[in-house]
Image 1: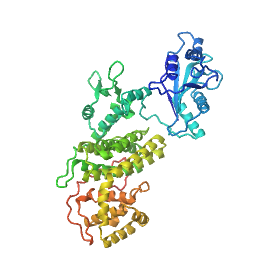
Image 2 (image 1 turned 135 degrees about the vertical axis):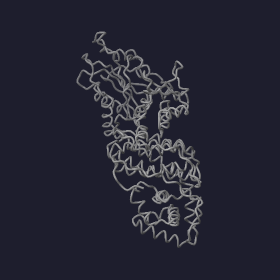
Image 3 (image 1 turned 30 degrees about the vertical axis):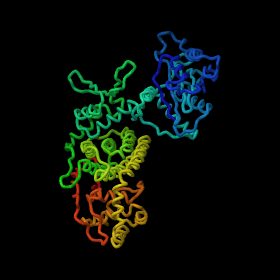
Amino acid sequence: MIPQIHKQGSHTMGLLTYLYGKGTHEEHIDPHLVASFDGMSPDPGRDASATKKDLQQLLDQPLHLLTADQRPDKHVWHCSVRAAPDDPTLTDEQWAHIAHRIVAATGIDPHDGAGCRWVAVRHADDHIHLVATLVREDGRRPDHHRSGKRAQAEARLIEQELGLHRVAPGDGTAAKRPTSAERHKAQRQGRERTAREELRETVRRAVAGAASDEEFFDRLSAAGLVIRKRAAPSGDLLGYKVALPDDVNKDGELVFYPGARLAPDLSLPRIRERWSGDAQAQDVRPRPEGVVGTGLGAAAVARRGAASAAWQAMLVVEHGQDAVVAAHIAATGEVLDALAQTSAAHTRRELREAATAFERASRSHVRAARGHDRALRQAARDLVHGGPALGRGEDGATTAMAIDMLFFLITAAAHWHAKKGHAQQAEAAARTAEHLRTAYQAAAAQPLGVLYRQGRHLSQPVLQRQTAVLRAALPGLADQILAEPGWYALAATIAQAADLGHDPTALLADAVERRELDSADSVSDVLVWRLRRITDLPADASTLPPHSSTGGRCAARTTAPSVAPPRRRRSADETPGRTR
């Protein structure tokens, strides 16, 4: 249940006309009162003898207790209360009970015998509107300070008592929701999302991995946004606002949104904190190029770098100091945005949904210590400059590898938020993980299919040897892994790693020891990507000949390993630990 306090107004009749009208798209059905301050207010919706004028005069009568200079300029209080999409349809009596609870909790009518006059209008199944006059019966002003937070707190109690969907409590760090007017305008224009939402996503993408004001604004221009910059008399840039080129108001003027109104962390000062941290770290490398002699393009190299950065970041999120963890979680959002905008068509939608969902998880009241997140920000930068990835070959396989690593990083972020009591952020991270799970299945199907076929062609002695290695390294997980379809892909990977001189038993133990596997759908899949990243095997196994059925060595590699990213120096603020 979501209560929303709207801007105070000056015209009671105008609001009543809207509430009792048909709506902008005939969406108002059977508007009528469900509750009022006295229980007997005229209802122009169902009483043919009552008019909106009668109701307006009744509500505004306390204004006449005051002289003209004592009357508040904005005397109309307006609150909508909306049920969650999966809640059952409530009766008028239930909505009346909710209305009484909300006006009491917000100080509009605290049941002291002299509260404000108010009514609750229902014109749809899933919500009501509360309208009140901000003058009490005794002529005093009501104590409705922080009425939004008080209404939210009461809504949480109502949800529990009525068995409704439990909405995670907010903490004031969420981006501003689109207004009903913005939603209706988007519908009229045939847009799937409001202008505010489109702008927020475009600005987020422009920020991902950017290293300067100039690069940020160049990306906004390239995305087709109209930009207005705000400068001080000295010429120093203070802020910016953006508009869609075709979003105009009734006067034909472009509708601009300042960055801070899109999201709290999209104001220019907050954005600058990101690349100021990069400058202090002096770790902004040039765009990635394909590695000569490896057959790897820039997109694949960038995805391998993102997988490595996500792997390193997991340890920080699990054990680091709060400010450092917050920086890594915020930078993870940049990696998701960069991955989404450079992904192939078959993963693009889910990755965009993942990035949008994680936007809520990227902010909390824990202020990020920028600079510690430079490896993730560099990964986002490399993804953007690496360009679009193909959905096949090493590009597609390294996409699956990166998504797999990001899934576990975001799961760790969800655990951290939950431990800190950040309910909305934890819920958003959990939603993100589900989108990544779907995107992973699309990205991994082809490369894992190749590995599966290679594993199925291993000779029986080789398979028996790999089974023995698995049981020795992971006795507690061996039976589960052997029963999974992905076992054959893992067996092929173990064989290829052994051919390169690695100790499979040590590799498996190392891959499991450092990170949890409880949230994995397939442990064998996870181990495939971890082993291929650790040993620098090609993510696309089709570039290697399959292991011979007689158990001999694989032929020479047709694709050399990609260049490993430089080792990152551990900050003094990060928890020491084993990394790879």
